[in-house]
Image 1 (cartoon, rainbow, N blue to C red):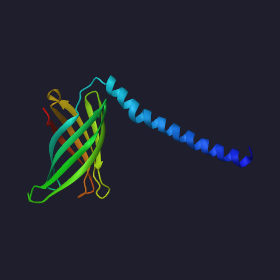
Image 2 (image 1 turned 90 degrees about the vertical axis):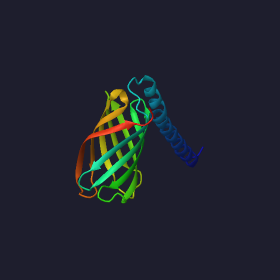
Image 3 (image 1 turned 180 degrees about the vertical axis):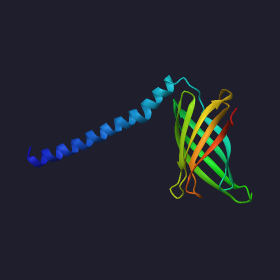
Image 4 (image 1 turned 90 degrees about the horizontal axis):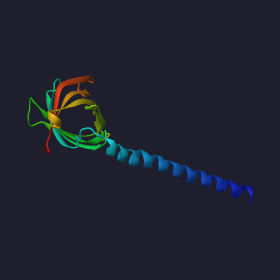
Length: 164
């Protein structure tokens, strides 16, 4: 074998090895670990559909949230469909689709959400605890406000399970 063949063979085998290692790491991280965690997880299952309503104080909007939670072990992800209604003019409405990830630790639920599209910025965090045997989640929401460019906190947030 000459030098060029050895060089090409080394480059090709390096690329194939890198791809194989990348595939195995992602397979374990995204398939095996969540599967294993779902088997050994012994906590509450909050997967399903939830609803909530929050009054956004400085902007005179009420937002109705339809939340779909998917759970694998202690990991959470899903979608939030937000309907913003102007409390001064009920006909003024707009919708927003949000994505979230989160986790459950000792009945504490932390959910971080952001906008599903890159055209609008929405960012916030929910810190919730399960109540009434898992029929409700109660806690706090912290979010960035588009109107005031500030960070706002909302207490006494309640999520109610739809599918009971």
